[in-house]
Each structure stands twice: as structure tokens, then as C-alpha cells.
Length: 354
Ligand SMILES: Cc1cc2ncn([C@H]3O[C@H](COP(=O)(O)O)[C@@H](O)[C@H]3O)c2cc1C
Ligand SMILES: O=C(O)c1cccnc1
Image 1: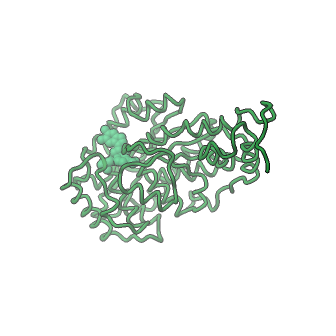
Image 2 (image 1 turned 60 degrees about the vertical axis):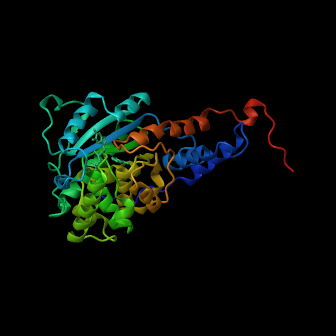
Image 3 (image 1 turned 60 degrees about the horizontal axis):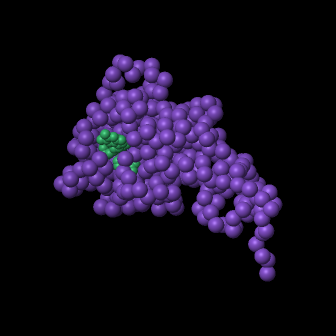
């Protein structure tokens, strides 16, 4: 597929080495800033700079609908996807609050919202109309989308990340909005990582036990009916969806192609990251995991990527909210590296060597 890069730039080991040496000369016992030190070294390797900088960050929220919503797998109606797009554009969603708090740019990309958006929103600078189709098909009945639509949606995400780089953003937070997308994500994870549906399917927006059992059986029927297997991540994406998940795959790849640190959000974003890593394994080097969602499949998706998120706030929202909350830790890691005094700057004695 043309939009999937053959290879990504390699990590810059020399920049990482310079960052590590500087860390050991800063006025603290070596290693005492723990995972923040690891984070600073990783950011140096990603950006290819001994003194990395992650500000300003850009948040991309990809929005799309899922045909499988008609099966009654979410606690909320499909109309909420379009209504939340309006809420993002007018600044009222959780992720908007955190974006303002951290000086992040935020853009909502309609890659497949089913309900027409209200005319006042059209042309709003924070809303991008890149609709590939108005929602996927119901994966229980047929493939969620065609290979061409999947490629188009991946391209939308890839270009959105490239645009962020061209506008001077130094890190990327990738989020989503799409009623029923925990169903698509659970199905993708079950296929790609071979985990039981019992262990990965969760309540999403807050369904009850009866609906949860129904959601599992809907996913089981879809997986059995579609032609999917773990060796074909693109085929799984075509069969199960969704458009915003495909766009997130593209955004991760597009960001990494330009050495952008990528802050991954919760369950849905992590499943997108898993698909992207199956397509292009070296992408893993560019991913930093913001938080551990309480959606049960997130643990399995993180394990599949050997990922250890920065935060665990028992959140299960999506939108990029958990990644946005973790962003200040990346900024702190960079500031620690560039602003702390060294032992010689501050005239402080180094460790006693035996
Ligand atoms: C008001 C509202 C705001 C949201 N923001 C993110 N999500 C999250 O919930 C949805 C997935 O859950 P499910 O698969 O159960 O539908 C996605 O849109 C996700 O981003 C929201 C959901 C709602 C209702
Ligand atoms: O972790 C997530 O991303 C998530 C969980 C539930 C609902 N929406 C998103």
C-alpha cells in the first residue's frame, strides 16, 4: 500500500548518548529522576537532538462512525459522534480543556462521521473535512470498508501529521471520537493479538452486563463472518474498521516519518498503534504511552506492544484526553535536560568514587 512507508528514520543513538551523558552531569544523583531520565533519552533519540523539545504539541482528534452501532453495542446513539465534533470545535470537551491548559493546538478531522454536521461548523479553522465515507458498514454483515477507503483514511491521518510538522509542532497527541469504536477496537485486538473476547471486551461508554454479553456475541459473529487473520493487519482493518482507527494508523506513521514523538492515548489509540506497528514494526520506537485506560482490553493491547504508560488515572474516555494529561511529563523531561545546572556549573562536588 503506497501510504505505508517502507522504513522510518532510525533512532539517533548518538543524540541519545549525548543526552545520557548530560543527565549524569546534572545536579542530582545519577538515575534519581527515574523514568523521567529514560523519557528524556528516548525523546533525544526520536528527535535526533541531545536537547529535545516537545512544545508546542498538536492534538489530532479523528472522528468517524461505525456501522456496527446499529447492533446496539454502545450506551450512546450514533448521533453523539457528530454532536461531540461540534463540542470539540466549540471547545467544550475534556480534551479541549487539557489542550488549553498545555498550550496544544487541536484539530478535529472528520474522516467518516455519519450524521451531517451543522452548517455553522463548516469552514471552522479547527475542523477538517476529510470524510472518506459517512460511517463504516456493519462488520457483522460485510467488510467495514473497502481496501481503497482504508488506504484513503490512512492517508488522511498521514497528511494531518505532516501538516502538523509543517506548522512547527514538535510532538503529536492522537485521539479519536466514534460511537461504537470500542467494539471495532476489541475485534481488531482479538484478531491481531489472539486474546479471548472475555478478557478484552469492556463497557466502553457504560453498557450494562446484558449489553456487554451481547457486545461480545456481536464481535464473535463479526470475526467469524469476516475473512481476518493475525498475519494481515490491513485486512483486519478493512473487515472490522474503522475510518478513524485507520486515520490514527496514518497519523502515527506520518509523525514518525518526521521524527515526531507520538503520545498514544487509551484503548482505541493503542489498538491503532498496534495495527500500525504490525505494518511497520520500527514505529514502536516513536511511541510514548500516556495512560492506562480502565477499558479491559487496554492492558492486553499495551502488553502486545510491551508498553508501560506514564499514568494510570482509571480513565476511560478517549479523545486523546489521557495522552494530553501525560504531555507535561514529556515537557518536564525536556526542561530537566536543558535547564538543570550541571555539577560544574553549580560548583557542587560529584559522587565520591571508591
Ligand atoms: C459524550 C461522549 C464523549 C466521548 N468522548 C469520547 N468518547 C468515547 O466513547 C466512544 C467509544 O465507546 P463505545 O464503544 O461504548 O461507543 C468513542 O467515541 C470514544 O472516543 C465519548 C463518548 C461519549 C458518549
Ligand atoms: O480507553 C479509551 O480510549 C476509551 C475507553 C472507553 C471509551 N472510549 C475510549
